[in-house]
Length: 154
Image (cartoon, rainbow, N blue to C red; front, side, top):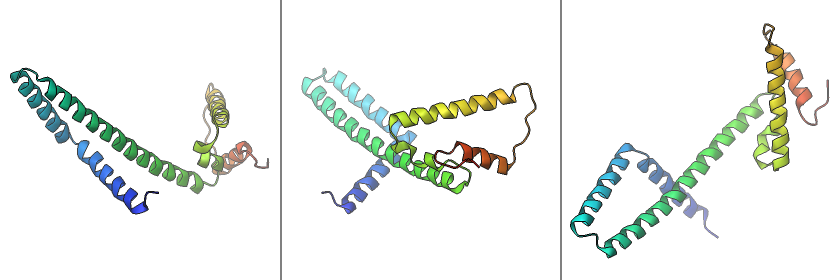
């Protein structure tokens, strides 16, 4: 099993790699290297061994960056999910069931999506042809309690 310290070190390296490669200067540097390599290949008559070497190295670099970006993207999305969960938990009238929705099965997610769409449509239909009256915080809390799965209708 891989140690926690090793994982932290690899994660730190991948985060640094992500920061370094997301700069414009990194793109310009790679463009200059590619242009130089292609000019050198053309001058040398496009040696086959150089082309194979370049293809091998570039594929290895692409794989490294693929996993690096996947890691940093997953880390960022996890942090964002934790922040959103904290916001949902901090709002007393919010549907706490949505905190762990990413672990739900597909049918449950589809059902909740349909429910949210129907709520949106009903609110949209209620607004047409009438002035919008502000809703009080207590009314909103009562509405959300009615819609929360497993809650008692008050």
